[in-house]
Image (cartoon, rainbow, N blue to C red; front, side, top):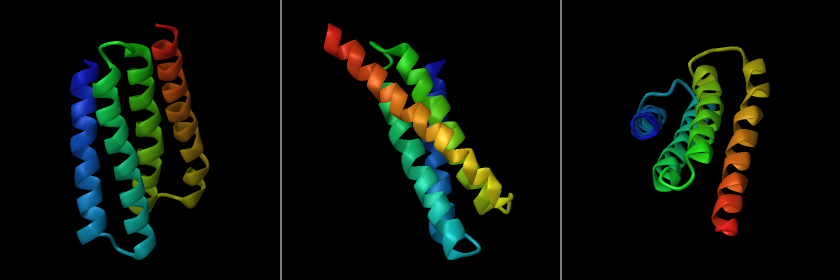
Length: 108
């Protein structure tokens, strides 16, 4: 299931980036779409890369990327800007996932 979610996450990230480049209503929306897409894509690929050894961190990467990216996507599509206060929760989860991954690989 992690692989399926990671692949879908990467596909969505590419779509968000493309929309940011070609269809966003304003420069700020385009930037949010680009940033969300970049982080979501990186963590989709990261989850695929580590899921064989580190399933927990892979799932945490996807969860963090979803929170991070979806709050940015929502704001780009007109949601209230206070939603941006939730974005760092996703970033924190992504950082934790990479630290957890380092710990797993470092102990082995």
